Length: 193
Length: 66
Image 1 (spheres, each protein chain N blue to C red):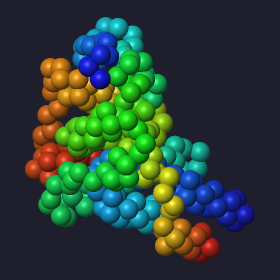
Image 2: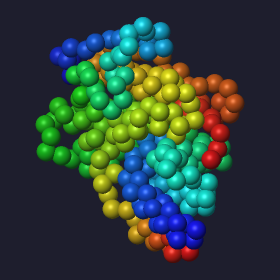
Image 3: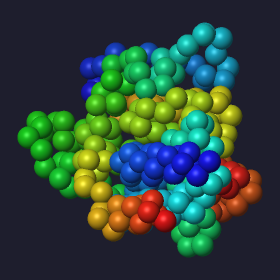
Image 4: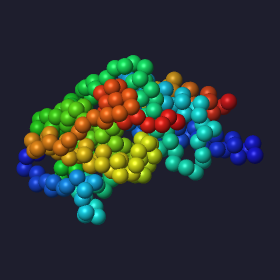
């Protein structure tokens, strides 16, 4: 049915536009660099538009889209052979009317976020800010639901340890296939979309 | 921050409790988690709320019309 296809296509493009703010948050969590995050979102959108026939209407669009962005990030890492743990939170964040202590705490949090392995940082913002369920996070990042829960849990507890000066928990980078690249960014490798 | 009283649960993979603090997804359940959620919003919302670049929107709309 051509008419049905047209409607599905319209919904698809509306969904892409609707998820752009969340893709930005994920991209910034992964890259820690605003320009790189913008490029990553654009690349992911291009990939999604090219692969729109592979999206099954009625399935989890957010997980599908976040996974495309993540795979693009990993693909870029392989090409660049570089790390991306750049501290690049907009200065406007700190130029608020908030009390001095709050601004200092935000700076500390920003710095601590940069020290987290990228997979934990990504998991934390996707659950806490983007509102993904653990199941959707697992689908988006190609891991088991238990692993997704563990990443969010460890990110929270590691930040708590660093920021409150309590004993640290382990945040070792993953090892294995492509460990040199992915390990530097704290990203476990997963199958591509 | 130092005055906050925190719970320190075990590793989730070894715990026998049905649900751990910090394990409830987007719903924080300790003072630190509440602070963390609020602060992450302060750090990331600025970026999320910025206008979408025109060229990106144009790209999507061009594809829609294909």
